[in-house]
Image (cartoon, rainbow, N blue to C red; front, side):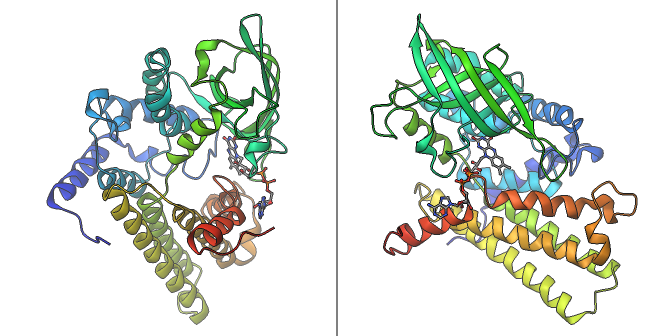
Amino acid sequence: MDLGFTAAEEAFRQEVRGWLEANLAGEWRHKGVGGFREEEETDLQRQWQRRLHEAGWLKLAWPKEAGGRAATPVMQAIYQEEMARAGAPIILGRLGVTLLAPTLLVLGSQWQKDTYVEKILSGELIFCQGFSEPDAGSDLAGLRTRAERRDGHWILNGQKTWSSGAHYADKSFLLARTDSEAEPHKGISFFLVDMNQPGIEVRRIKQMTGGGEFSEIFLSNAVVEDRDLVGEPGAGWKIAMTVFGFERGGLAQAARFERAVAELASLARERGAGSDATIRQKVAQAQIEAHVFRLIGLRSLTSAQQGKAPGPEASLTKLYWSEMDKRLQEMAVGLQGAYGVLAPGSPYAIEDGRWQYGWMWAQAETIYAGSSEIQRNIIAERVLGLPRGR
Ligand SMILES: Cc1cc2nc3c(=O)[nH]c(=O)nc-3n(C[C@H](O)[C@H](O)[C@H](O)COP(=O)(O)OP(=O)(O)OC[C@H]3O[C@@H](n4cnc5c(N)ncnc54)[C@H](O)[C@@H]3O)c2cc1C
């Protein structure tokens, strides 16, 4: 494992820092982190995305022929880490930018690349992800939304759920079954669906945070043209796996943890618990876990730098950070004693209830992008080689 950075990498870090100093206004920092807390933040996230795009950052990893900088995995990690460290907002079209655009670059048609990629990056077109269904989450291959050819179009019927940002998305990248006779993984196709059409109804789901950032999508004879089918009919599963391959964690998360642990220590001091041996022990434990997470990130980075594709060890990273964040948030809420139960926004809540909000949000982290149970199954079977469970 390589624990150091080269002079060129350190110079790149300074470049990112310098740009952030000049472009990330103070009031934009630490907004939209950990979910959308306020409606008005979506506007801020859209503006931030445009600014990043204009500066070329959203194409950092792209090949030079596609206008990118062909950044190495280490440079990408440095960029993510500096963004997290500065508390930069999360961009509004993050699913399109991080998952769909790179997938279209590899597997999309020329028309799809020409029509969508630039608009996805600039934030002109916001995409949501329509994969999960009420009975198909972890077992995604069990999805039942159907797409049939009728009068020269694809006609889609079914229901999606937990679709983040669907209520403001212009389009969705969505999986539907086009062949019910084929094996579950083989009869699925990948579509780009216009959200603003009569066949689509979006119903927001109210979350326990008080927000409503994800929705159910009902498709009743929704229409998709052939040009919006990505790849061949039946190739949807393979394309979805490419999409998942672009989901990352790593050093950005480590930087967030380190900042959170420092804030936790201040909170403990402010609450007069700085000399409490149990609390001190817990803060020290959190510090150690944050450091271990950084080392896990560096190990993945070393292997990416050596050209190795992310393997099942990626499950270890996801399991570790999501479970750790839950522990951190729980500790912060616990430190507040009776104040810990106050809702975010209450005039009596400490720091406007941001830790309570963080605690509620953290409950989702061990579910999305593969739940902890699913990650443990993968680690047991594919890392440790244990027999398959029933
Ligand atoms: C904040 C958030 C945002 C999301 N955004 C999107 C989005 O934009 N688009 C989208 O398509 N989806 C999205 N999802 C959905 C997410 O992908 C699913 O919630 C996830 O795949 C789990 O599926 P499920 O909710 O149907 O739970 P289920 O798969 O029904 O699982 C229920 C429970 O059973 C456990 N379980 C399931 N199978 C096994 C097994 N084989 N062995 C052991 N335990 C098992 C799970 O771990 C879980 O605890 C989002 C979810 C969240 C929380």
